[in-house]
Amino acid sequence: MSEKEQISTQPYKGTRDFYPKEMKIRNWFFGKIKDILEKFTYEEYSGPTLEPLELYVAKSGNELANEQTYNFVDRGGRKLAIRPEMTPTVARMVAGKIGELTMPLRWFSIPNLYRYERPQRGRLREHWQVNVDMFGCKTIEADLEILSVAVALLNNFGADEKMFKIKVNNRRFFNDVLKSQLQLNTDDILKVSKAIDRKNKVPKEVYEEYLKEIGLNNEKIELLNSLFKMKVEEIVKLCPDSEGSKELGDLFELISNSELKDYCEFDFSIIRGLDYYTGTVFEVFDESPENNRAMFGGGRYDNLIDLFINNANVSGIGFGFGDVTLENFLRTHNLIPEILNEKDKVLITRFPEIPYIEYVKLAKKLRDAGIATSIYMEDKKLTKQIEYANKEGYTFIVVVGQTEMDSNQVVIKNINTRESSTVARKDFAKFFVTS
Image (cartoon, rainbow, N blue to C red; front, side):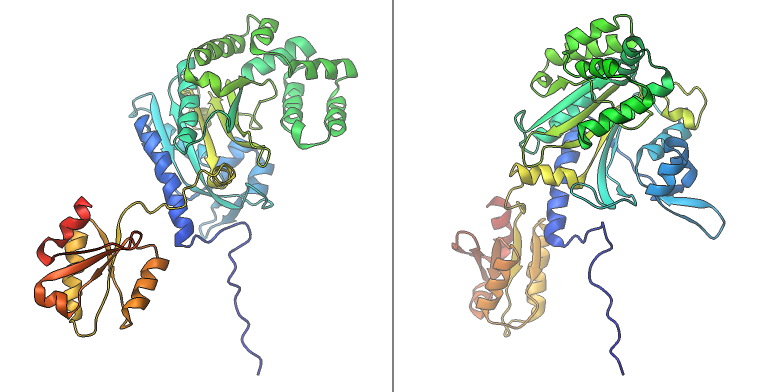
């Protein structure tokens, strides 16, 4: 009789297991992120993991929605998708209560998302994504704030201007320049923008061949490439009457007079791949040669709420970044502390002659004082219990044998310094509160 076939212990391709050590890291950087967002007065929201498939079809088209989503038909015949992104959900939520919400909204979420794509560095099939959005503010000051939030988030991990740069452009301005300088129509501008978005991901000849297929001759390709070398002060003069030109000029004037000037730079090649961006667009790049890539990006979108309400006239601007790319950035720059457990963690050791209920009483006193505490579960030698405490990251052990019980005292040992203190049993919880 053959043995029963064993089920693999590996997670599904493109997903991860989070053991306590990995969860500690994840919770640490989510905590750092929430700390900054709340200081900027952004409020957390959430939404369902399942959404109608049509939500993603309306935003990204049939091909993208069907190829990159995990989708299925439920028992009621409804076409559903496991959310691949959060933006359509938040747009739906804003549209659903648009008459009750006070603008501008400052919202954020950290959902887990699923996309059916080839797993690679920085991109998995399941990941967690930080989404930060402001709705209901059309002025350029909102663009500056969103950029400030992105910088503050990375600063909070210890990152500085030498580690990352934010490259900024304006999608409206980009379209106006291509229309005036290259005489392109709206359809061709969209095609050229998609080529530029892939410019640094394919060989030069492949990029230029695609431009020729669109209809650009060598002269126009050379002119287009020259635009990428221009500074913001020069390029805005090409379309001085453009609304996008004014937005771009005003934004960089604000940037030049703020701390963002060390982090932000103009780059005409930044256009973002998604068609719904209408104004400011930006991408954040890791400056390390080991991880020199775009980590995340975002921008302004004026028409997304119109998916649900015609002429809603609610502008939005925001960005999103995944936990995988963030962790790669932090590890590349050695920004993850070796010790993440900053709070005391106490192990109460056991002796067979002491009734277990006495240890339960001690543990309750510590927990009531807000101290993380556990009791060693087995009857083993004290050396084994101390070895366990070392391996599991405890900061203190509490020793109560017969001698301590008779004298109404406890012995507290610091795992790191190996110092011991004998304190009265009735006061021992105060030791951790004041130490």
